[in-house]
Length: 473
Image (cartoon, rainbow, N blue to C red; front, top):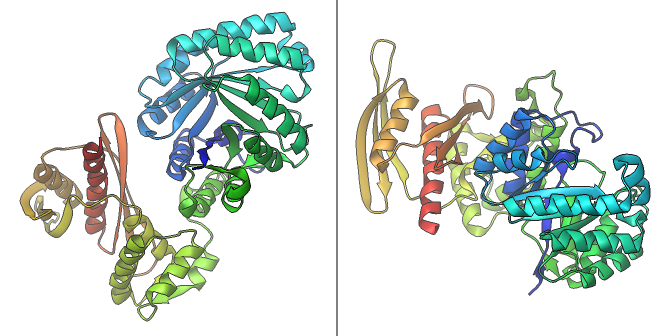
């Protein structure tokens, strides 16, 4: 069986300096992290808490949102209090990491840190130990290792390991190494490090060899690769995963990145990073030309539909393919034609979902400007039929309250959005519901011509994820 490689994404740390990207807002950084986790990235690096309370709040939000990926925060080597601030921000994080990053080349130590090698060794030992005392996962990053003295590099890495570093990463900041040189140095480092300590690399793309060097590092036995899902300053996540997939016979490793959704998610990340802050977010619905030109109809068979899904970046298994086609037929029978944008929304709503513990059977809404909104709802849980009626502040609120009563628990509504998927009198509406439960956020989507129906389906989708995770736990 192939060994597993850890894929770390540093897009958030370089977004402000990447070509064509502007500084990401608080909300966009949260959205970027969610997309990276959905993609299957193992480690999400946030960089240092440079903006004080604003960055701390952002990391706190990530800590309660990100469940599967590790959230990594860099401490400031010039400020010991940055360790406590990072730990406080990561308090509720399921998988957290503190990162200590320092230059190890003479030129960088003297001109950037204004310190001699002996002082740098003491600083590395002190900061790594302080981090290890408060966090189980500590990474030491040796910057500019390609121009460092070999003896000093060995000393500084040994110092980091002795003081509790669990991951040692080396960064060829100047980008001066060829792939065969990278292979040789990583091979020696891997032999030198204890097996219990992971070895990571970050490759500069100064000579356009970041991808080559990353693959050379993999072949040399590295455990973690730092990539970017947007930008070109380091190893491309997309190209790296593709190489691993096409040449497993040589690389002999696997990773958790989901290739099925990769094309779509990377496009979403690109849209997020290239957004013009002067334009409303509604202008980011994606490129419309191709989507509007190609339309499907009721006459298209499942193979045609799945082919279009593949063009959108999805590789659906048999079960998801059948579910998507069933939903497509339902929509096509009402709308005559289905656009790529509508098909995209269908896939997001019915594919890659957890089992439906609670399923919508029927609902009746009574609402008006002179009466209180009520919802009569029928759900099915296996063979059990659940039926209830509630009033609320509007039809959707009444529906959500009714669901809470039927399932025996009301979850905190963290976010609720409705948007139009298509245009015209037969437009499809997509609802997005995010529920907060025990400090974690679960999202659900629903699509229908009826916004109440799409809202109910989205709410149930999020509820089913909560139930599924509880049962799995």
